[in-house]
Image (tube, one colour):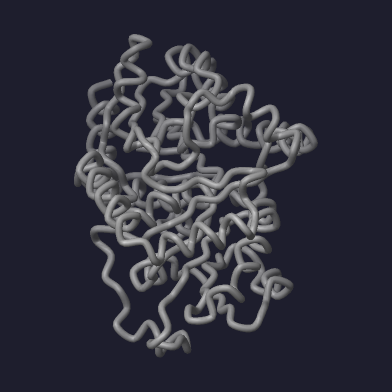
Length: 370
């Protein structure tokens, strides 16, 4: 069968690539064409446009990029019709993908959605769009199944692919030596995100607290989809940069400073104490406060249903607050015990399901059933 996939971000590229691998295991004749990234490209098929072109962060930024967005949307629509797939598989990235879902349905193409857009957080009215445009939804967060049921829409919970990836990961034995790190100095992992916009907002503040923690080494998780030279203006004495080694970094870290996103869940599943950070433009934040319907921004707290990790958002995200919170986290045994207990609860809620494999099995089953 022919599969057209759309992933608009780095994490979507990772999850879509795993899904492609499992789809090929279920369907030896699988053909892939996609908007995605390097990891999807490694699975074969044809990359039409890289997700880097699609990366837009925040309400203001989206508004100023509307012409570019429309151009990519039109390109994708034309390419979808030319390819004539058996199914369009969408991966998160709601703004673009829900429009593509509408277009595909209007042209008689089946639509599957793997990893629900976060409409439970804001604009819950989009559930009606999902019901009208998406034939099958495959969710990866346990509370999403209940959320959709409230609107009379049945979905498949496949388990969480991040939990699977962390469980399968094997740390590199010579991690310190290979990366020229000091094995006698504990690591503070710094995960500023994967897009320039968020890195610009986050990283300067995160590394500003280094002088208060001379007994630690700060290691920044860089991503190779950005030019390594881009990171040079963040360089300081005592700070190291590693590229595409986030899991290895987390497996060796004592604590972490993490920009809100999938990385907060990864950090928790590695059992690393963390502070979740987030800041965007004033306009984007103001609009967000009006429309966001959930009490937390981190996946850890959302899944747990309570404040397991500390969130420093917008005005609270300052070097002073970061320094105080990190110092408390590293020195208070009761704080650490509460955090570890929350992480254990999180793992239990997520379970182990081989999410990509389960999703692929269900997708092929539904497609073959007609």
